[in-house]
Image (tube, rainbow, N blue to C red):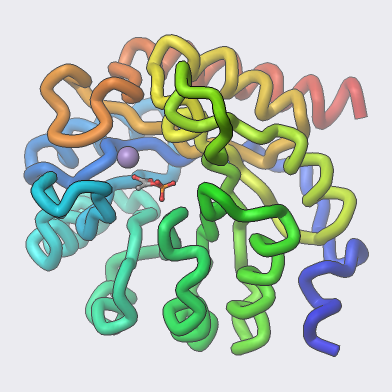
Length: 262
Ligand code: PEP
Ligand code: MN
C-alpha cells in the first residue's frame, strides 16, 4: 500500500549533511529587497531563499503579494545567485508557470487541507514543503503528505509552524513535540518555522535552537533588512545581523547534536 510509503520508518535516508536553512522576507516586496537578501545569504553560505509572491492573508484588505510579478523577480534572483527558491503556491492554476522558478513549492498552513492542490503538487516532480495546518493534528498532517505521495511525489519536507492554542501571548504555539513524533513515525524530513510559530522576533533565536535540539532537520526563518518597514510579518522577522548570529549558533548546535550526541 502506498500509504505505508510515508509512514514507514525505513525510508529514512539519514544524513549528516548541513541543516536545511531557508531564509528570506515574508513577501517578495520588490526586486531590490530580494537582491539585497540574496546577496547577504549567498555570502553566508545559505542555499535557500524564501519569499512569498502569492500571499494568503487573513484579511482580504492586506497586501496579497506581487503574484506573477513576484515570480518574475524570483526568477531573476535565482538566475543571478543560483539560490534555491522556496515560495508558496495557493492555487493549482499558478503551478505550471511557477515550476521553472520555484525549487521547493510551499503549501501553506491554510492550504494543508486543500486536497485538490495537494494532488496537483503530487503530480509534479518538485520538492514540496508541507506546512502543518494551524489546527491540524499530526495524523491529519501526515495524511496530507500521503495525498501528495499517492500521486507519485514523495519528495516532501514537513514544516511545523505553530498551532492554535488558548495562548495569545504568542501568535501560535510551536509544537516541538511533533518533531520526534514525525521522526519516529516517518521517513520524512521535518523543519521548523519559529517566525510564524512565535510571531515575535525576540523569541525566534531561542525557539530555533530548541527546534534543532528536538531533532529538526532545519529551519525556515523570516528575515528583512528593516523588519519594521516590512510589508508583512515584520514583527516576527529578524534583521540581517540577528539572523547571522542565529545561523552560526544553529550550525554549531546541529553539528554537535548530529555527531557528538548521536
Ligand atoms: C509564510 O510562510 O509566509 C506563511 C504564510 O506561512 P503559514 O502558511 O505557515 O502561515
Ligand atoms: Mn509570513
